[in-house]
Length: 81
Image 1 (cartoon, rainbow, N blue to C red):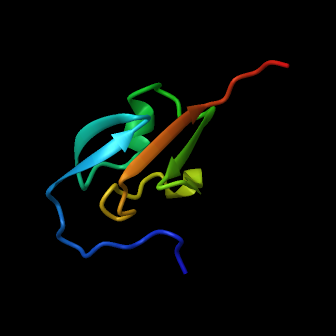
Image 2 (spheres, rainbow, N blue to C red):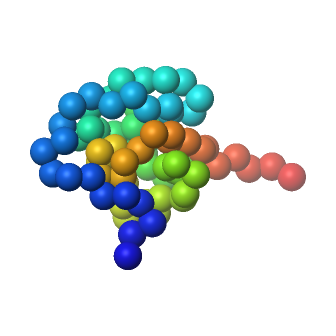
């Protein structure tokens, strides 16, 4: 059973989503991977949470609409001590 709410197929309209604290209009077909790739050509070194739940990288091809996303946080790994 998924931790995320699945939306009905065909819900393709724009959605208002908060991405890293900024409100954006996204098509419901926008994938999590596309949002990560806006920041870097590589998917490595990132973590993503949707509505407060961490999304494993294997699910990043799911869409904003499929995940019923209202808030998306994209984190960059930082080295240090």
